[in-house]
Image (tube, rainbow, N blue to C red; front, side, top):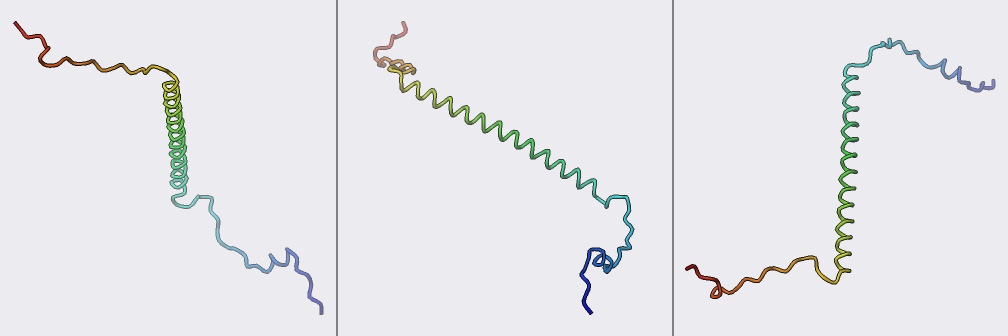
Length: 96
């Protein structure tokens, strides 16, 4: 006798049935896990926002420093003022 081809109905008919009751209540601690995942995502989002802001601020500072250094190199005179020269101690005025 030739074996009959297996069909989906025959395969699922051979499986044992599941007799467990599926309740409508979520498992214990489910809400706490969901809230914990949400809070972790919220913290990550705030950290990512802070990281992007600080990175952009650092890049802008570096660009400003490079621009000032380049403009300083192009000038003939320095923007720094010379230090005042102090007179020798024997040339100081004496009190009367």
